Image (cartoon, rainbow, N blue to C red; front, side, top):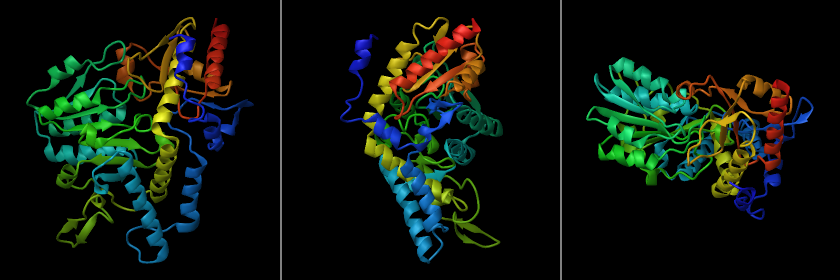
Length: 419
């Protein structure tokens, strides 16, 4: 892509003011080793706007109380704020109803909930579960555990050299024994956007439910679960400008109603005696104990912030950044991009000849540039490319072209230092 082509996709400045957005994120004013912080580790966790920070603080300073069980004023206020956040999530992904939205600790717990509740109730010896070769460990290990417990078999969709699912091989994996498919929407280590609608359509032709791991997708592209027709969808608050320790499981109402509780305790019950317990209605059946109330409220505020900026505007800005960065590193000697899918978002993973990723990350840190190095909880991806690790720069709504220039200059310095 030429520089002219890159410039042509830059968002209209009248619609997207990146400096105004940056002013909403206090941490971006931080200095690291005397240098201005350049935060390019957004796929691991994103930074938080002041509105989310204040909303979380407001909960603890003016409405802190347990929810659902209190008749006093604080309890009613906090309950309303918590349930309002659920409605915001419902609207954000266009779920059919708020009872399809389950608050969890994050993507990992959401997947574990499905494996331990749906999987334990429905899988039998000899059944098969399909995942892809590019999955995060949190979408591998829970399925391995339930398959081992039930005597089921885990099958893996291979990926090509560009980091794309080989769809014809996926079709071959489906048999009458296939009982579930769980795939990532966007790869955290490659940036690949998977053809999830095609995957879901093919699965449903064979009456197979599908879970989408949308942890790396929900803040980059609009998601409509009714249009996708996925059976489950999971994501985390901390990757979409919200607090840590809060996540979402979306599930179709008929599936959630048929599933047994994941955990036992308070609030997930209807009645309890020593002889028998009956369970609460959805969504509370899956929300045992005191939840992360402040986290849920903060997530709701993050959704408001994203909606105010506009997901379409964010996507256009991030596409500009990814295209610019891809072009900018193209002529760096010895640098190879890992993950060159036709459909990508916001992730630039690479290796540099004769320089270990950890050395790259350490050197860049002293330039004020924060990137992620390692296997990114996707060791099978590293095995696919026969590499131990990559360096990964990942972009968000507040990053700029100038920050990418600093990254590139840092990489050129590394080549000089390491010879």
